[in-house]
Length: 341
Image 1: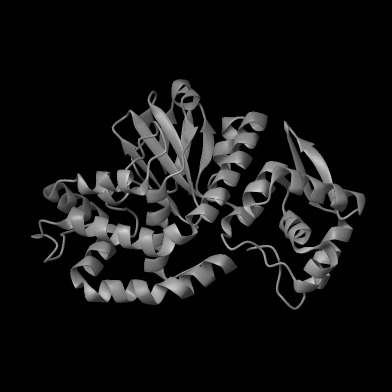
Image 2 (image 1 turned 45 degrees about the horizontal axis):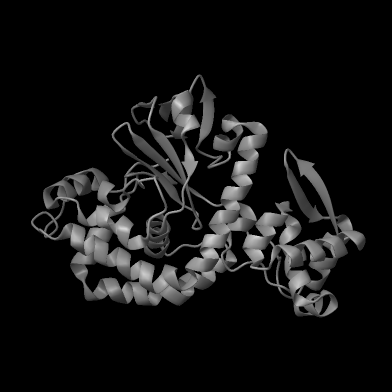
């Protein structure tokens, strides 16, 4: 079992961080695996997978490099650098860390990822960091950047929800929820980060960065003992970048904007989360919630400092009845600096 010892100072200095590069790497992993987990991701994959395969087919060495860097249990470190954490960086600022890798170090890291000798011609190539950065730039430019504004709203909503959970129930509960099947707080300053037989690591000081991504994947990374990161997948309704489909009949009945608020409340959400997910203003979302409350379609409850809204039985029946011909409105391995959770 892989676990970290995390000191009180590390937890006190921890922070949620958005990373365009982490989102790009997670998207690369999705493209390379050709596997999706929710409706919005399936649409995205169908749209971009042919071009991705064509891009790799045109550069066989790049295809070999990506396959080696995405090891089965370990990512090559230079693919997943730890975010600085002092401020949010642009994609180009972050990818500079990939480019800064020495070619010899890149080969060594690939050897760890593949778990054995690095195949030729990768072993003798002197431009591996540049090649990997070029692939990441392509994935960012062609598949992530066009919808980055929407993905960013989803990531911000995830941070809002987890920050509320942290303030309400503390670090043990917040960390347990990042990846429930693999990660859990063991007590006595120990965090299990994966179920693999990796050596324990100590982060008594320094900073712990928590980095959400929309694809259903993640990893851990670190820079010495000063900075460590857990990249984790957004959960549940927040993960579907496309958002739930609003049935035409429901949009006609309630109005498209109000129906868009209602269909998202199969899982409890706060007003601020609804604002970021729908792109509507705070005042508009508040008015829609008031109408839905008065109609008995949603209810609200307090969870710590947060007020959350969700369907009543009547609201659930209405949404599901209108959606019978459109599908359920609710959308449906952490790795690290090579290390898998």
